[in-house]
Length: 93
Image 1 (cartoon, rainbow, N blue to C red):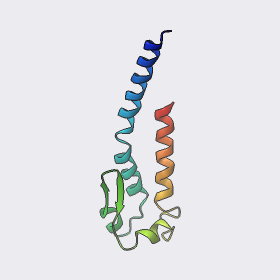
Image 2 (image 1 turned 90 degrees about the vertical axis):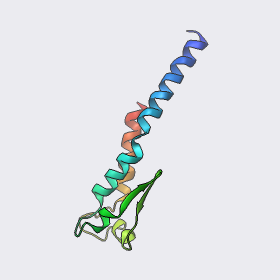
Image 3 (image 1 turned 120 degrees about the horizontal axis):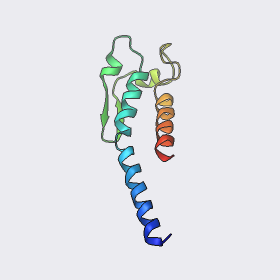
Image 4 (image 1 turned 45 degrees about the vertical axis):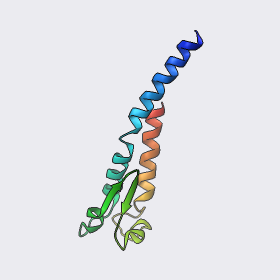
């Protein structure tokens, strides 16, 4: 196999990885919102994606994330991180 052919395969695989990673932030935001407790819906409603970040903009987001609610004893961050890890593993296989 020539070096040029190997480079071509590497380039193609990197483009595939890049394409597959693009929706990851959006999907992670959806997972974060899904993990957010829903009593009044305020916490979910005030969670937004801002660029490559998830902004849980409410005064009790930290308490919820620390497991304050029985609806989300693991908070929202840990399940979202687990989701991201799982998705990245699938993409990199």
